[in-house]
Image (cartoon, rainbow, N blue to C red):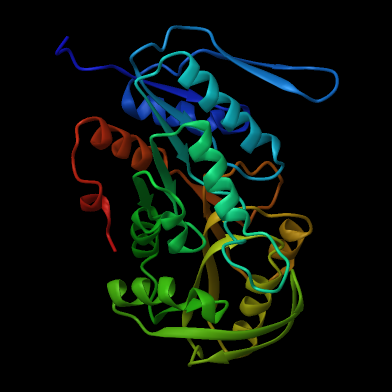
Length: 312
């Protein structure tokens, strides 16, 4: 009875590419799961092997469309009903995170609703990365392991060996994130101040700081339509920047984002692979977070510190 419970890794449909890399890093097989789709759009989840008494890790980012979230909820429910010892949701990209507060009357707080859905479905722990707002961790009454993509981005930035490097943020809201990068690298920080007339549409933008003759790296967490980040890149090049690159954790890239990135002043646009990117854009590059998540799963299983993984 004192034998250590095994762990098993399973994946939803659209995050399988990442789950396979995580399993390769862990040197374990990806669990066998069947997801059956019906003519009316419903789907059913079944585990094709016993998970009784096992620690089950479910890898699934909840990016649009909402089928990814619903699939994860069904996976959690099926695991609880199959007598799993614990169920851990591994959600590299936590969808609906931008709806973290009431910013105007009579709106929902989508991030809190998703947290409640996951909790009621029965997860025992959440492992996620670069939440849009850190306070979303407080929406859960279970342990939340919040990882940071800086663990893969900082070594990449250093490998570029850029002279006169400047870290920048495309909006004031991301200044805390960009500030940690600039302090770690020991380089100046530049801010962009933007105003919006409506969602996904930037009205105006001003640069706060000096970019003339500098190699600029823009830092963000999510790129959706790429309107803000490409506008910031174009303005910085006009202000005399030598080159402008952008780094963002989550590759949402809704149309016409790929076209905007390709036509912009950006040298390259670097993401993690928390969300799959199938569109063709030569400027887009993805760095894998599989090893980071695999290491976190190992540490959770061995009751070891997660925070010692953090660079910043």
